[in-house]
Length: 407
Image (cartoon, rainbow, N blue to C red; front, side):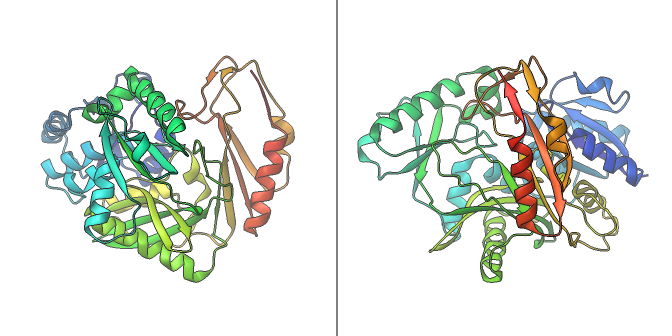
């Protein structure tokens, strides 16, 4: 029985889906997380705590574990574990991405540097320290201010002029001064990235790298505009309704981006923007799509995305990488405001909308909602499936219109 270590940070949505896929495949699984609770009680005897912030020490701990219980693969299910997984894989001499290649997926300036070096379309960019003199008066607006090490649009803000730029930088400085954000960013917390704003339509590509070759699993439309000042994602729908020529450019740009970083193995999630000049990489990650969005995808005879990733990791047969023919979509419920939830209304009515497959609530009454750019958690996910992408999108919007958060 193959033994796989799953790196699952406590903030991840992904634990149940990866564990379910592992159980289906009959894998011997150990979960490695950043703290002992709360997941340890869910998986007794299959738990290891690792220092995610110290990848060399973490990789050595994985190697010591593997000396006793040999591992066939180390898989990161979310961004915080990808660099540690790469170091551990190298330590164990298993197949995987090099640590150097994964750094560019966790440090936004390294991503831009790699893309520039390999001639992949990219906006102008510059890194500044918070202690530096403000560049506000010398920039070409609009710009986007980004933390180097956070994910999920957290801390990302558009500025259209010097005044809004100063406000954005001050807001980001305060965010990176919080314990959780500072720990996640590590030694990147004293700097920020400024890059030219890329206008256009945003899409996402889900892929699998095998021996350096990109296999496209899905291309998602993001029909809601992401113009700022914050970049809260909402609806993902696949298959994309874009013309074949644009789909081909999206795939080729994602492939070149992975190649520029040196990624060659495992899942790839790429966010791109399309305009008259072509496709522009916004972000590239060495993991699957975030949140619970992977539940929109089914392959072959009902294989999940997590099963595909695990089959690839242990070199098990993959008879097909073709997604099922139906259209599918997910809405990450918008964060309607800042406050504590008093009530969530309309869920039964939303679930009754035709084509709605499931509504998965993460937030509960009593929880605190915090919007972007400081917030990081979506209240819930709405899933729809049908024959036509436009009908799926319409169903998601109708379902959302029936839900009300009372704060």
